[in-house]
Image 1 (spheres, one colour):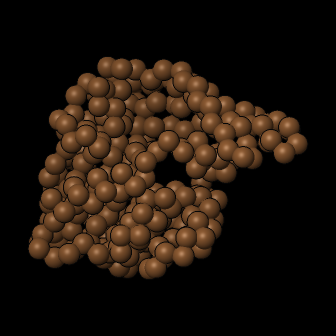
Image 2 (image 1 turned 90 degrees about the vertical axis):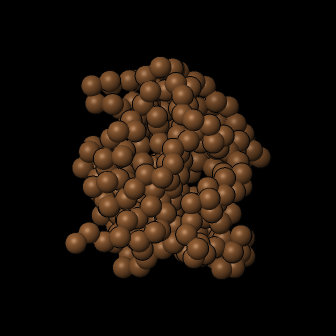
Length: 261
């Protein structure tokens, strides 16, 4: 099981209460429809599904969704959320690593959102992730993913941030201290989360480090090409604007090519 998100996952949804999963789902589906062939997009594979929030919104719009994540804790939360929602058809979830996953099934659309791709920090991991997406698509099928955009990361530079959120049970303060490693195109993101349990006033602190790879369009184009995928469109996440030095989060859509002979 993955060591990252092992503790973090318990507070993941609370820390992301400001994230509009419904809007993001609508955006991704509209993007897919722009580039889809004549066949309808019905079956969706979500690589790095986390706690299943996008999956629930997709299923709520009638899509058949399979979510994959390498965190068992995340999938436990996702499965519980699906059971509480009574959505039909319910998303299904698979424990697996994107770099090696093979489900022996094809999908109309493969997604990898919330910069999951940037969690793959070596060229080998990135290439394997692209091959996994391609392996689950028929020719003409679409792959949509977002990532940390290198020019913006180097222009804006990661900074220390503090976030405070709470619900009826917990009050959280998260301090994010990033370290830029420009020789490896990565950012070491150090989280410190102070947790107060409201029922008894107890406090604890947890720490976790995530390594993120920022990417540039020429390398993405090459990675996709080696996986028999063609880049169709690149835009700033959610806005549709041309990526700029202020576009930290950028979205790509690629198409599976006919099989090579």
